Figure 1: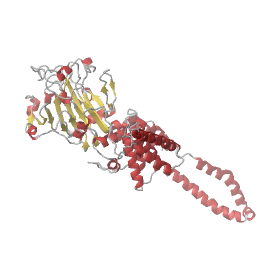
Figure 2: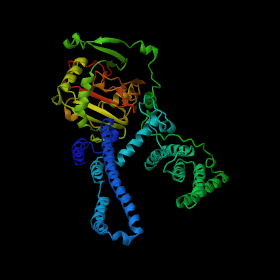
Figure 3: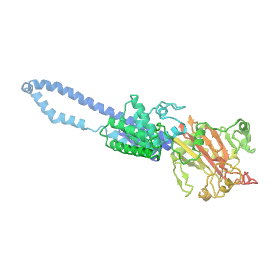
Figure 4: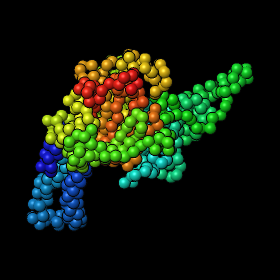
Length: 555
């Protein structure tokens, strides 16, 4: 036991100490929790074996003493007349029973508790549980899944069966409630009632569910249903103090609505809703387009456009290395030109880069458009790390390969970024280039190129680098994804699906140096799978003769 505890301390302290919280933002890091839990189970089983062995000893002693005392109690004087019996009675009470007491009081759980205490400091936090719940709700919304589908685990491409119990669903609803998200509170609390009505057992009671549900529908403006649910709650628990107060409050509000109707002030108050509530509008203007593309809907790849897309062998402007072994190139979109390259990275290279990157993974950040400061955001759920060429020869080799393929220099490019997406991992629509004030003039004159967003207050994110703006993006897919996880371009109506070993490339800037707003793109939430990508952002400086300027502003 001691040796096992020592191994656990060394191994998992080293693995988990670097992770801390935010497990939900990286499936790669969550795998560490699987091994941690497996070790805890092993520790628990060892504790059970020790406890069972102890109980066997106690039971054996009890059986022995039962037989002995039944005999001695039948004739105490006759039994003690034998001097050996008298001696053994004294010895038992003075030595053997205290020894049994020591055995019973022996703390055989110490090893398990020690292991648990060590690992508990690296357990997921409340933030992780909330993040995981939000991830399921994000998948629910993006892919139009109802709670029953998620609860039954009926997701495409799943390898393992998984279901949500009554208590799990209640936890989902409570998480939404605590965030003031009454829309999802209603959906999940209704699912709890459905499973309870079907006879499923759990620690959650109908009264608890109705307590949350009645207030949530009230917050959504459905006064009649809130009143009905509160009455159901009181029928189950007449002494529920909060429900009694809510009932009086709801009845008062309903009476006020009736008086308004009678005064012909409004008739909206008595309109009965059908218990179907709309998802609240949020901050993202292209939410519907973005999510429909994630589902594979609304892709604008018309037959006419498809005729302009071709496959070819790419030799990178007759780069010597590619003349010998050209890459297969496939057009994904015509304008702006987005291409996919095949067999860019081998499985061995991918595994090595993941191995190097995993210890360095940290919550991915975004740059605040007003302050220029890096910060975490709910619209980017992943962990990333940055790899230098000195980290491993494979990094330098992949960098050279991207340079040969694109014909651009990597001398002014950013380090290779490796990202692993977490539960429902995503990066909502964004630009890779910095939106500088002079870009806005381009968007207000002439034909509309894309959605115009005013970024006058945005800091020049790359000014300190001295290498100009991000001219191009090279994105390597380092894993297949069973469902979800597409790269989509809402303004174009384009969706590109991950394929392990392939890479996509596009220019973020027009030849004039102005930002190409059509390249606003997003990483869709991962529905099923573990998504790994790596990317290289090329910058303007050093590309002057490799990608010459155009003659007009929109070239």
